[in-house]
Structures are given as structure tokens and as C-alpha cells.
Length: 159
Image (tube, rainbow, N blue to C red):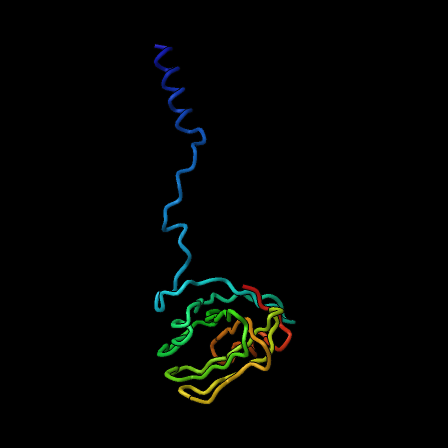
């Protein structure tokens, strides 16, 4: 009888011992995607005089994704945005065609610092909103958010 108890104890201890980790499922490894656009979502960290702020930004990576941007979108959360990497860097210019919500358009230089901010853009406007210098990326936020966070020329943005 003691032998049966000993074998049972060994079986219980083996079941409780650390086991090799199973391979992570593809779902767990997949990057986050936005439910509306289907674009990858990444954290973008903005450092201002008021501190560090993290924005969940959709990445408009391809020319087609950048051409569409936030067109036709009617809402966006306070800590959400869209980032447009410019490869190669250029002097970026954006417009609000087919964009029903006002945005702050933040132009980011090759040093990852804000060059200028096109604040509170006019929905549906065809007027260009442009960078004042060579642009490594553009970050779009809900209108007024740049001012709320203290995003000004010189603020640092990392992605």
C-alpha cells in the first residue's frame, strides 16, 4: 500500500513541477490591429513639459493607407491617433478631404522632434496643411489633443 501512495505522490509532484512552455499561439504573437481600419496599432510616446504620454497609433505604412488616412472616420479616442512614417523623409503636406472630424496634424522631424502642429484642422477642407521642414513622420490626433498634452515644436516623439 505504501508503494501505491508513493507512486501517487510522485505523479502529483510531477504534475505540479514546471513544464516547458508551449509555443505561443499565433494570435498572442500577432500585433494589435485597429477594429475599424485593420491597421497595426503601436504605442507612440510623446514627451512634453507636462510628462510622457502614450498614444495608441494606427500605422499608415503603405502609400494606399497613407492616402486614405482617417478619411470617413467619425470618431477617435483621446489617446488614439494615426502615424504616417515618411520613407524617405520629405516635406509632408496633408489635407482634410473626406475627413469629417477635426484633427491636430503633428509634423515630426528626422530628429524625432515636433517641427510644427497644424491644430484644429477644418473638416473636409482641401487646403494643404504642411510641414515647415523635412518630415520623418506625421501624427494625427483628435483636434485639441496636442494643446491638451502640451505638444509643441521641440516635443519628442518616439515610435
